[in-house]
Length: 255
Image (cartoon, rainbow, N blue to C red; front, side):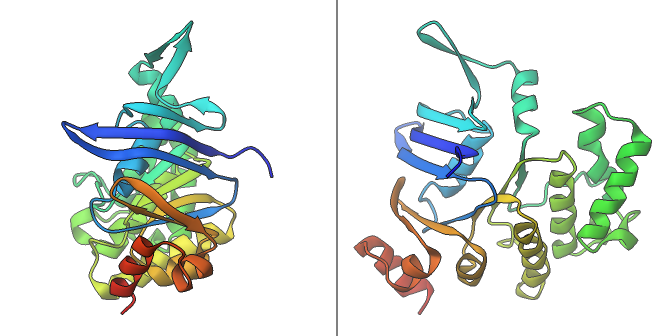
């Protein structure tokens, strides 16, 4: 198989005296949909935020496309990158959060085109055309002039997905993208994610949507207490888990 797009080796992260990640090893290859499952507090969201250096790791190494994230080795030391260098790296890693994080004073289209114009300094006419195409892709072209407060939660999250795609990332990170939605709005966001997966987008998805993980995921990683407990084919992990910790978790969420 080709070199992984995302590669983690012995990644550790602590907040104060609490060790949240205890040496995570993981590879994600091009076109793969990797689903991260586990109880709250297991480190899933923190690991996702480390991939684009929103959180600084305390140990181990993270690469995206073979490039070390957040740091550069100079001699025998690692130097943290400057903010503009980190921003360049982040442009290849789109992220969709639990909360939508849209600019409330900007329309749907303005939210989508902000990144390409500010970060990539691209011409407005060009990014507006692409932004309209992205809103069409997520089924919201007719809402282009609506402000976030005029949109449902599901619509706001779809705008957030379009905004992340606007920077043309090679990998998309989803941090429980449906957890803040009313149950009847979950499907419209999952439909967009299914379409993204079908298009070949590399995705790492923290989710409690077991159906999505089973039907769309290529691999499931189960995390608990800051450790990667079990990884494998979604059907195998979800239907016949090997580890007792995975079995205990699934017996509760699938009951």
